[in-house]
Length: 204
Picture: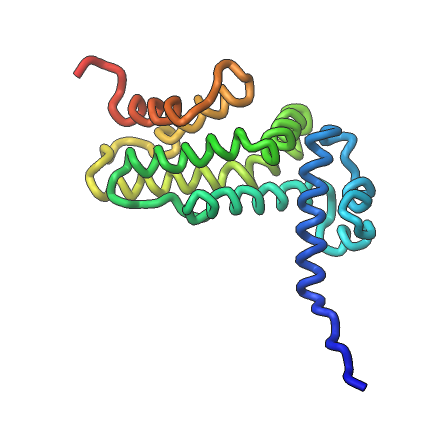
């Protein structure tokens, strides 16, 4: 009798992890953060809640990791490394490319509903808000800052410019327009933000 191969635990774990990510993001988008529970995530994912607690200490940890994974997938789908902003030597082109990918992500239904739910909860839940910023937003902002510092080294940005402030000229308006729905977001919009940020609005 031929022995059957042992089940691949790593493959099973990865399948469960993916199911948990998908369940967490779907639930928070449907029900909001307060009503999303570990039990509900486990039931939607088809796993026991002990499986979730084996890997994460809370629903916030599950959701934040799910978002990091989703953002990484979106970056790779757009042909970018999730841990770097391209440096082709053309700062405007690089920023426009990354912001266009961000527009795609913000308009993706998989991302939009849960992201809005978490952002809203972060305004009233200080602990979650800090986690959301430190684990999701700040690492992304640091990538922009690093790309601007590279542009300074290449002589494309003034030395006296603070990269951490400069990046807000194009990142913050996009976030504000998306969160508050003051107007549509589009490639044309983010391209214009980059042009205004890099070249100003004074007559040339």
